[in-house]
Length: 304
Length: 304
Image: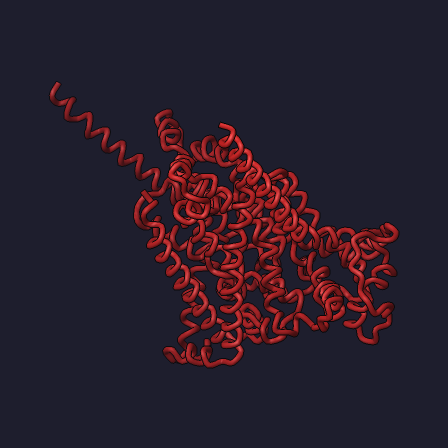
């Protein structure tokens, strides 16, 4: 009896040690995952002099002449010696170009998110209601398209934009973005899960296609819509390839492209701008993490 | 009496047909916006891309068969880029699958702060890479903190982006960004494994390793396939990071297919662009098809 008891407590002890070890490993990973983000944010509160003192050896070397070369060594610092808002003041009030680029990003991304979802909602309903082999073929080609890297789809996009004289206008980025099959795929997968009995019941009550769509399918898809919106937003907020190729006018470039071209003498500013650029994503994440997680699961086809 | 009996089903049938037709037309209307978009921006121009790949140039348009393909295959830059891309994907994709599975298995245990860890692991995907690029520079620069740290152990400083380890830096960046996303997929797949099977195995005194290898892996195999495909697609997006860090003409190991395509856009060589796009598309289809076949073979016995 007591022997059995002893083995159980030994096993429990072993289990506890295992849990402890796993927690420590997870914590190490968490630190690795968060460090770059934390560093970017804390460094944005350093004054330019402090940045130069810490990273001068890196960024000054890239600058011709190295006029702000201060120290040979680099100190990766987590906390500024003195919290300074000077970078933010410059970004927000003194040099409007950064805010202007931020606005460019918003203008490029917002219509894509809104209209891609709208078009996709219609299409998802169409795919759910349509019958026959043709539909299967079309849906399959949507999936193939979705799997293609940007570098492949950008070639047809570029050709069409050229024929329609859209190159160097925002339409060249908006229209292919809106037509992108990604949201269609996810929403269709979700809508197919709606029990046909709901739709049949509505039909018996005399509802037309539009009413079924508007009153049954769209309300049931609400959470999925949020999830897809977050995923689409992340993808386009990060865009680099499309503006580089389709917009030769750098005035229209989004902040994601512009950030890499910030003058090396303005590294402190760059940290502040980088932080501001992170905010929308982090806010979306803060409020929508559960939707995001659900969205990832729909994509995996495990749930939804 | 007899007459009405015969008439009724007939009338019903025609009503059903009418309803079916209405449904079909309705579905078509709902699909129209998306179909128009996808056909104009992706599918129709892709036929033009195929056409461009088999003619000598768009103006004279002489049919040359596979000459363009031979040319691209013999092109030094393309060979370098294709080799690098394959090399990168072969390292990064398996690592991403294995590591995210390990992370998911860790969070599948009852460890403290489980949901916080999930949040932390997922945060990098919400952060625009453009924001992180500065910190990456500070870390891996010639005078950066990684070198400084290594110098304490007597390791000589190297310029990471111009060394044999250049791809590894990008692999780390790729993992940093994608592990959380993949982990969510595995986490929900792990949760959906029927508990009773595992309990039976435990009663038969199977050890953890046996349970993992003989039961869990088989249930996970569709998810493993999905995560592999997703990581493959995402590994093609790494161009953004590489471009932001090194611009259009990086050190050789970082010259990826994406860089090649981007530079082709710059020189507007339609033949090379089209041919390379088709080669990439075919390669993707072949690789993904092969993965499906492997999964079909491996996960067959749990499907039912």
